Image (tube, rainbow, N blue to C red):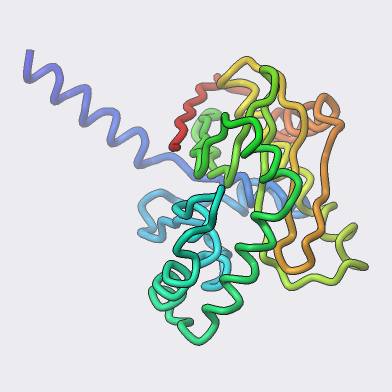
Length: 233
């Protein structure tokens, strides 16, 4: 009945509203307990590219989300629009350069060659009273194997990349774990593209990576796992 449906709907709203939110990005900060990283859903600070994303990073991601990756047609105009929307119109040339660097990278070329790729893929799962979620920049498939790609616009030197990757390892693992659980497909690698240097770092040890994430989550709380995944073209 309509009353039953309304009651169920309200119960779902109340339950979800009481949940804590942990992002895949926050898992990278392994020195903090997950409880300290949790963000209440009712704090009003919902995010598109993560709570720590910079204006430049958001503009670059927005361009790469919508541009024709094959041709980059209209890149100058789109970069100016997105940079202006972020209040950094004077940095549109940087947005253009970073987008071009990402497009020229091996992971993006592989995605285009496969012709089976998805951008801005939201992934999420619940663990007890906590929800973990994130958005994968690029997900592509080759011969039934999935590859997770994350764009980074950090201003980090090549010499510091190893140090930075140590922090990003669990973030990439969280994405791989959520994709594997949702699709039941094999995840071949997690690839990080550093747009400023053009450097690509690849995590191939996916089984070990998934074990690390499972341990991290198990240490926090044992509970049922419900995974949702959606893909946008």
